[in-house]
Amino acid sequence: MKILITGAAGFAGQYAVTHFASERGWTVHAAKLPSEHMPAALQALCTAHDLDLTDAAAVQALLHDTKPDCILHLAAQSSVAVSWKQPALTAQVNVTGTVNLLEAARTLNPMPRVLCIGSAEEYGVLKPEQCPVSEDTPLHPVNIYAATKAAAEQLCGIYSRSYGLPVICVRAFNHAGAGQRTQFVLADFCMQAAEIAQGLREPVIRTGNCTVQRDFTDVRDIVRAYGLLLEHGKAGEVYNVGSGRAQPLSALLEQIRTLSGKDFRIQTDPQKFRPAETPLLCADIRKITADTGWVPEIPMRKTLAEMLRFAQEEVRHAKTP
Image (cartoon, rainbow, N blue to C red):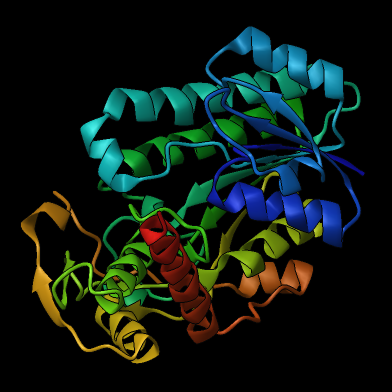
């Protein structure tokens, strides 16, 4: 089986390359931006390609050159915070980039299966009685990132119905793991805790709104779900991928406190608050479990411990002359 992974140099993308190449034994073509770096160990597992998804001709050329059996479309501007600051860039990458990929995919013979990764942010503000939220819940995005992901999902549905392109869409809930960028909340907490442990900052962790409840899953469980959906998911369908359990960020921060062995105060930082916030997100995962057998396996405490160790290594490395 031959797979093309877009966004392969990103957080989930790097885990996906490892999963499909090492655990599934598939032939992996990895698309990334020319400016992005991919570690040598990952490059040994795949054939890397420089690609700007907003360049339609380049996308067409790559797909006709590689002729993948399936495509995992991870490439995106994936930060809600960045989407508020750079809305045009977010729309260009997440919407135009997806159109370019779908257009190129439908011209291949046979057409590849495409798994397009969206976000739970598409649901918007939910009432407690709506959670865990199922896939048939109407979408009401409240931020720019979520709106672009909802638009991309609608486009996938059109290409599936109009051209018979076997597209499957995912609404991915929060995922985390070692190596995640600190613009994402748990990685940020772990880095701050690691710096406190090394005496590089005062014992204060600065946070945004920690009362929000989120559904977190280890990134390795997430990419395993993507593989099962590419094999067993139903074309034209949308699937939630998450743990099925919501936790307040404050509770996850307390786990990080315990794991770090260092006490700290918590201080809210207005710069870390979003213009619009979704208070509760939790996935109903019965559909993916029924169709693929997938359930998450890695406890979040283990994920947080690995993230904290990664952050501690990063801090120690930065201190070494």
